[in-house]
Image (cartoon, helix red, strand yellow):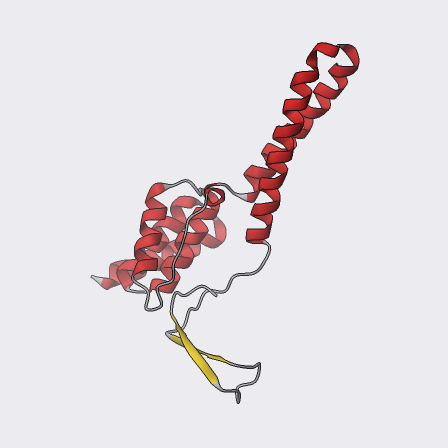
Length: 171
C-alpha cells in the first residue's frame, strides 16, 4: 500500500531536518524506492553515505537505483569513496601531531630518525589523499529531480536543444 510508504517518507523527511542520520536517510531512500521516486531515493542514499561511506547496504541500494535510471552512466567506485573528507582530515591531523612529536624527540635522541622519515612519508601520503578527496567534493553536484530536463547548447532557453537528462541523473 503506497499510503504507508508515503507516510513513512513524510516522517523520515521530517526527521531528516531535525535528526539527520544514516538510518534516517537510508529508510527515507527505501520509502522513496517503494514510491517509485528514484531521484529522491538516490539523494537520500547519497546523504546516508555522507554519514557512513562504508555501509554495504546503502551502497547496494544506491547501485540498484542508479542502474534503474533512464540515463544509466558508468558509476565507478574509488577507494576514496569509502572515506569522508572529515575522516581523512582527522587522519592528517593525527599524522601531523605524530610528526611534531617525532620532530621533538629527534632533538632529544637521534635513534628516532627512521620513525621521523616514516611519519613524514605517511603524512605526505595522507595529505595527497586529502587533496584528492577535496578535489572530488569541492564542486557542487546537481541531481535531476524532474522527469526530464532539456540541455541546451547555450545559456538561454532559445538555444538549440543538445540532449535530454532524466530523473536521478547526476550532472
